[in-house]
Image 1 (cartoon, rainbow, N blue to C red):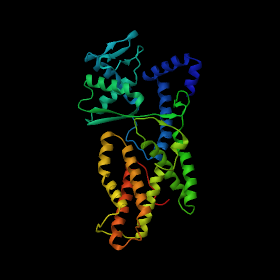
Image 2 (image 1 turned 120 degrees about the horizontal axis):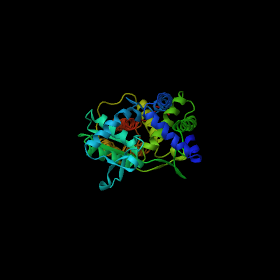
Image 3 (image 1 turned 60 degrees about the vertical axis):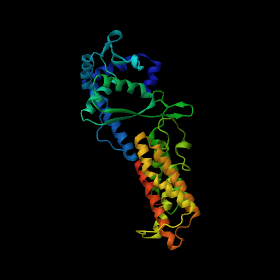
Length: 369
C-alpha cells in the first residue's frame, strides 16, 4: 500500500518495480532471497489467521511455483498456432471472436503475467486428472478466468477436466469498494478480535457464571464473522459495516448457537433419550418442524450442486426459527409419557441438524452459552 501511494506521487517507481520483477523472474539472487524472506514472513501471519478460522491447506503453491513452467506454455501456444505477435514484440492470443478480447500472454520485455502462470497451473493440475477444478475467485476476475479457460481448451491443456469459476462478490465500505492499493482495507484479524470482544460482553450479560467465557466468546465471535459471509448470496457484494458483520441478533451464527444450546439443555435435563417412540396426533408446530427436518438432505444437494453455502445457512436459520416456535408453544419435558419421547426425538434431531449444518460451514457450536 505504501509503494502504491508513493508511486502515485512518483510514476518512475512503477517502472522501477517492473524492472525488479523482471530481475526476480530471471532468477536474480538478491531479489530471490528477498522474495523468499517476504514469502515466509507473510505465510507466518497468514497461517495464524488460517488456524483461528480452522482452515488448512495441503500445499502453498503460489505464482512463483509456476515461473519455470511458463516457457513451456508459450511453446505450446505457439505450436498450436494460437499465439500471435502483439505490439512491440509482446505475445497475445486473440479471443475477440469469443467476445473475450485480446489476451496478453507475454510482455514485450519478456515478462510473463498472471494469465501465463494460470495456464501453467492448469496444465500442472490436470496432470492429476481431476474431474473438476474450482476457482473460488471474486467476480472482478471473470474475464481473466474466462480467457484462461478458453485458451486452455484451445491448447488442449485441460484434458477432460471441467474448469469452473465459483464467483463471489467483494467486500465494500458504504462509501465504495475496498482497495489495497489505496489503503482502504479492514484486516481480518482485527475483525475477529473485535467480534470476540463484542461476543464476550454478550456472553457475560447472558451467563455471567459460565466458566469458559473466553473460549465461548472466541467460538461465537469467529462463528459470527464466518456466518455473516457464508450466509450471504456469494455472487453479490457485501457492504462492510461493523454493525452488520458483528450483529449477534436475527439471522446470525449466535442466534443458531443459542438455539442449539437451548436444545442441548433440554436433552441434558431429559437424561437418557428413548430408543423408540410412537407418533400420535401432531401439533401444528411439530408438523412444521418435522417437515423442515426432512428437507435437510435436499438442501445439502442443492448447495453442493450450485456451490452456494448460503442455502445451508438459510435452511439452518429457518429450522432454528421453527424450533423456537415449537419450544415456546409446545411443552416437552412436562409432556405426558405418550408424546414426550417423540418431542424429545424432535429436539435431538433439530440439534443434530443445526450442528451438521454449521459443521459444513466450518462453524463450531458451544454446548452452553
